[in-house]
Image (cartoon, rainbow over all chains, first blue to last red; front, side, top):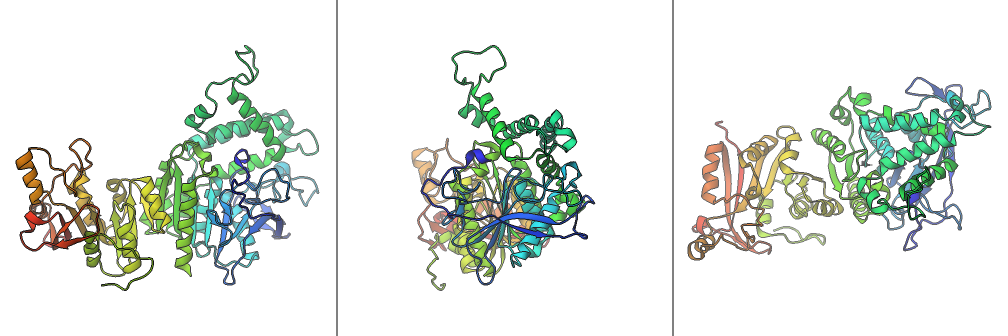
Length: 389
Length: 212
């Protein structure tokens, strides 16, 4: 996602922010995971923006996607090259207005951006977990977030907002802790992966596991499976774009040459672009985290875990007001999946708004500047706030 | 009529008539809600629990920005998801003339709503009759401002036709109001004398026929 981040054109920003961490679930009890494993202690890296009001009713939790982190907006240092990953949406006067709301974002369990994950030291050995890290689910990620939210003294969130895998966390929050969620905004997401989405994830995982440097996941301290992870990212990245956006951005234009090389160099601009995306990704992400998080996304099935196979039954536990948003060119989580969600929410008599935004950028559209999405969020959040106050 | 609040806007006469029929605090679905003018009016002045359905993305966005719960989609498809009697009122304002299958839609509306409010432009309005008689052209009026080739209005309905239709389809008309109003302007009035000829719009409060 980082390729879209830019400084705010008007210079509006929450300014300097600090990453913090929260550790809980101390051994021997630790945290019992849905997959049966046990983990403890658990650390979550998080950031907050804006002020929590005295009643504690203005907290908004932002959930990040596969490769995101807790740094959603602002800067860690004055001279940072880029602000946080959703700086266009989170800040003073923005879609999620930090002058009005207390915004929280934490790095998900299993990631490698400050929260406990497969690259963290295993307390039993002092060495990184690697493949001994227990499999975590979207449910586990949300349970960990709940511990953080309670630690911050918040009893009920004004809203939980996120796209893609972040959207799955939003859905999970809404049915797992309905009393804690006044509103939910799942963006460009699904209640469960299609076979297509699982297949792409599996190809990406195979790319990592086929890299000799992967070493069954015990590569820490030695060479890392950079090539496998780069290929995994390249595959993933293509699924976030669209035919239309790629045609406009690259077409068949050649990279720094007039004619084909007739060898296997990156002749086309698009080849050079995805190679660059892959290379850049390995500098900031851990291959094992990629495996664990994509698996968690594939396992996610809201109807199965909360409604005996029915999303309507799952949503019957929810009480939040919903704003569901999909994007026309998103073929990874197409609009029909959001519509299924909306259908179930309607059947449950829940307050739901749905908008399919015309956008050519594919799945990644939710991360790109969109005045429409900004205004939708603003209006929706204002109403929710009015209703609960 | 209502206490004036600073955030309230005046709405069209026909919408005001519809609003006056809705009980305060009711649960309302507005099909083809447009920019949400009626829904906003009902939610702020009558404190109804409202939902709208609208096809156009830009109009849906305007509704959500105003804080109205609105779902983007085709009304014919969206209504099938709701359980029986999910709403006290289902409103179809100035939309029936654009519907491909009016009997199917009305049946669904009366399944999901205890009552429904239906309004449509009256095709037996005297200006329409005279235009066709004297010019020989398909009528174009402020209420139906389109040419035959670009109109979204695929049905011509008169007040009389709708009354007859109620018997055929088996629903009951509880209330009828013939209205003279322009297409977009706010003003308008009720027509009591010769409504079939003088009204530009008909508004009906309908419900399931108890005998059926």
